Amino acid sequence: MSKVKARKFLKGQFVVQQGDVCKTENFVLSGCLKTFHIDHEGQEHIVMLAIENWWTSDLGSYINQTPADFNVQCLENSEVAQILYEDLERLFVEIPKLERFFRIIIQKAFAAAQKRIVNNFSLPAKERYLKFREQYPQIEQRVPQYMIASYLGMTKEFLSKIRSQLIEEQ
Image 1 (spheres, rainbow, N blue to C red):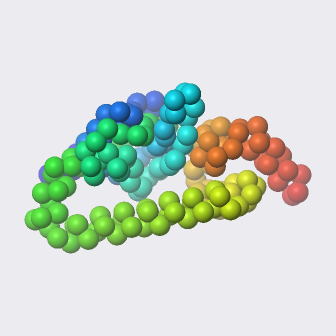
Image 2: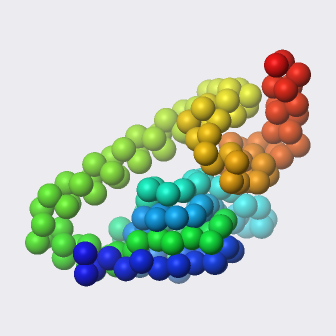
């Protein structure tokens, strides 16, 4: 536990910035964060939203200690528990069960990411939105619609149209 540090961030602050090396794995104690990439045209692409009890970072940067492809930014005042890469690697040697714990977390995250890719390729936009609402009802109330649209790979106008259709159907 001495290697885990709780840190508070204000709304809008970055936990990780694109181009910097991600030094910590981050467990959300409170708040809401987004993980996103800014492309060469300045377009934001949200790949993950994280709330309480979720892990977030630029995993590729963290594991390989290379420049981050993603930003992690607080959408609310947030508190995260952080562990440095070097400390976690040392703990894996000292506590083998901890390495297993993190392996399982990463495997589940990878499987979820693959499922999301398949859904984005194969499901119509309305179905993607309905799945999002079903899987993450607590996030929709905390995140602006344009960010949800980015996460789902659609424009905010198209998401608004889908939401209007759903209201009419009720």
